[in-house]
Image 1 (cartoon, rainbow, N blue to C red):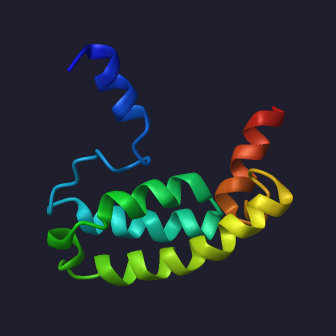
Image 2: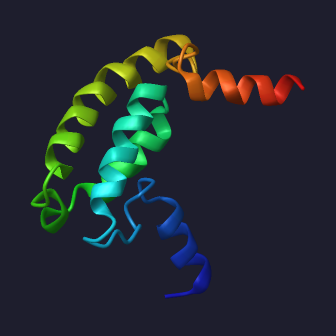
Amino acid sequence: MKHEESITKQTNLQPGANWYVSEDIAPFYARHLTWCTEVGLVERSRAVTTALSKPHLLALEGVEAAVDSAMEWLADAEKYEAENGVWSRLNRDHPWVIEQMKKCLT
């Protein structure tokens, strides 16, 4: 396979599909996924959900629950963003978002 074809195949993958997540850090990513849905980060939530949706990771404590919850949230969030635009699902009242907005304004 030519290098260009390889890059094309990689870029056509769903974000997170080619991430390697070890069993040691999967619980951290599960908590990160929950945080992403709280903040309203649709693209990041989708990528982390994809990365964690491997059978050996789903078997770990807390991972399957986080992925199931995120998948349910994503179904509504993606529809919402399709109707209202990218970043429209962002939780502007979340402390992290407020902090980032303040940084941008100073």
